[in-house]
Image (tube, rainbow, N blue to C red):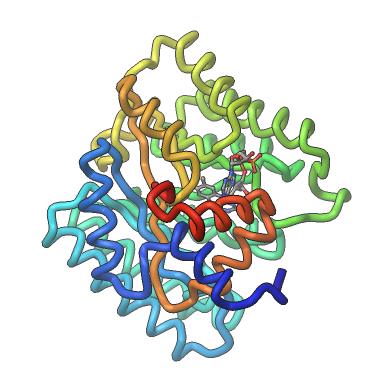
Length: 306
Ligand code: FAD
């Protein structure tokens, strides 16, 4: 996939990325607001090599929080701890994340810590717990169904944070070794579904981030059996039992719109930034089916609806 011509990757990326600039993300959110969705915004980029780069992310996210407020958008932010320097200078990374989370709290917003590969699973959970211990309860973490440890992570986070626990649950995009993770599709689905059940069981706010129908159907059945038919926002006052469905920008918009039309809260993950090439490659690697979207987009551009 890294050998794919850049113009092809760009075609792919433009379906999944709002654009290179913050203004592109704002425009995309204005467009999709009409479909009843709310948002979480990601500034593209991951592990960095110097703390100067961390300053860039800190400033960009700070500007982003202001822009969200200014435009009256129903959006929060998703950040990657390694982009804030977690693997270079732990102390600075914590202080950068704290400052962004504090700013988000003042603005009534929420911070989601994206989950990266297994090198930083515990560290990422620890960052979240550390912020809560400072009274910053407007932060939640992502857990990955494919990891064996996830059930015990749900247990320990819920034991520490009680009804302030707020998870995004996904299958996990990083291909981990079979010593620590399920590697077969059916097992990953089974484990992700079990994690959804455990989160709801423990009364945690549960954001189901999957485009896979068996996962969505399982979540719907669990929600129905608990009488939780209405979504609740991740607003600060609304922690505890609640849920939402999350989708990546450009993926299965039809399923998202259908859920929204039935009254479920849906959130779109909106990435923007100049690192669209890496993100496009990741989407291609993850799902070679994407290639068919590209051909369609090239031949029939009007069908390329997000
Ligand atoms: P799949 O079985 O992969 O997909 C089901 C179907 O959806 C496919 O058959 C296809 O029709 C469609 N589909 C899926 N992906 C695409 C695509 N790229 N293009 C077109 N169609 C597609 N992972 C992490 O490790 N950490 C995170 O923090 C994280 N955050 C996420 C946030 C959101 C909002 C979402 C939706 C996913 C996130 N992920 C994250 C990725 C996730 O872990 C999975 O890798 C990804 O969602 C694919 O799994 P799936 O459950 O959608 O099922």
